[in-house]
Image 1 (cartoon, rainbow, N blue to C red):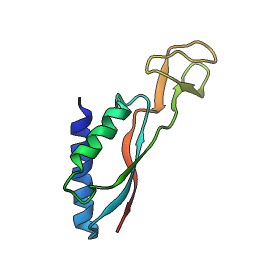
Image 2 (cartoon, rainbow, N blue to C red):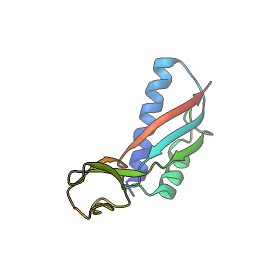
Image 3 (tube, rainbow, N blue to C red):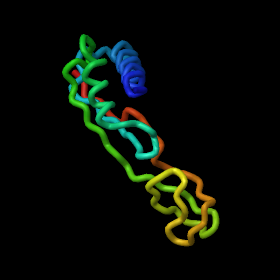
Length: 113
């Protein structure tokens, strides 16, 4: 379950920001997790609760945003929605798609005190 190591990395970022910005409590962590990121959302939620214990984010609420995945179709020169990494273009059927969003995993926002 690589979600635990992802949560450990998130905690490292939070801790570094707490040191830099002098906050002592995190109330909310908002993550953006794309559908192509390979992250299991429920495992991430579980890992977050476990990893954050004893830290500045111990009781933080986790809010996860799941943006749609999109790709650029080189054949019809348009941005199209996709569900999986190797989908074909829903407009023309071409398979020459370049993913433009959906693979992200990032801290979008934190509420701190």
